[in-house]
Image (spheres, rainbow, N blue to C red):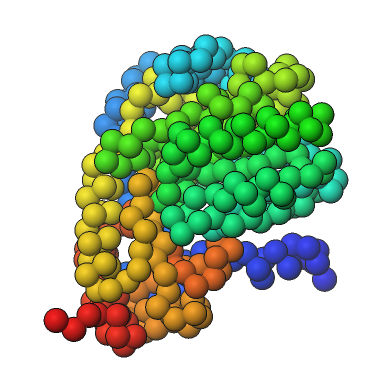
Length: 398
Ligand SMILES: Cc1ncc(COP(=O)(O)O)c(C=O)c1O
């Protein structure tokens, strides 16, 4: 057999998003693009902002000598410095270039972090619902995933964390704004989480890293504040991505940032740089590093995403779906009207509406709607949602 048992098992278990995406492609072949409403994948339709194109044009007009060559594995010093300036501005903590490693997206960054810190059998805690790739990334580097619950608002249950941390715990991964729920964690939550981790670090006399996946950090609605994890835990590592905030998912660019006062800081950064190399990334894409350097303060239109959120949320609520209003990212995670979320998404599929069952995020009984799509797709999906709501008698009679 060419494929290892582990890869085969993981391919079977963790491919709901891909499966729905492929299903969408096949439905589009059969019925045409316009008749299929694919809300399954988080691949933003928004183009990168004009500032990105300007930077690209500037670079084309005046190429930097050697700009396509190998570089230091950590990335260009000036790009790392620019990220450090932006982070200092956002957090009020003084970062420098040596706290930053440029990576192949947040996915690459998370793999670099886990490769660097995990010994075989080390436990990494996540909170369901969660981005299922976390399980694959942890497994890639010999770790063991431990999944804990969230409350009805999809906020991590810290009492569960209190009892779940053991001597084997190496890290806790959080993701706010969250994929798949859109939840944004409050300052109080992050503060309590930091206190808890510090207590456990003291008890077990070891570092417990707080890994914050901030792929959606800039996509937050209603002017909600974003509490930096760096204010609440020193052993904190951020994995950031430009995929969503600049609409560059295919270009594969992001970074790791580490708290300037993290214990054994330099050893850890050296580990990240080494792991970046030996995982085969070698360095983050050169061209993108040149471009994002000057785009630290730029973001796609969050107002447009907020409009889409409001439109979908209002409509689904009116139809009787039970849904927590997302505060960020571009996903919604309503309750499935029937226990079997796969049976429910199959009902929607009858109307050419594609979403992902909650079990694809470790939370059966829900479904994820990705609304980073164009208006036609979003509007066109409503009929299917309505038909299924009627079938399950969600719509309240006047
Ligand atoms: C929560 C989360 N983390 C990480 C990623 C990966 O981001 P990147 O494209 O930067 O690798 C995604 C992509 O959808 C995501 O949803």
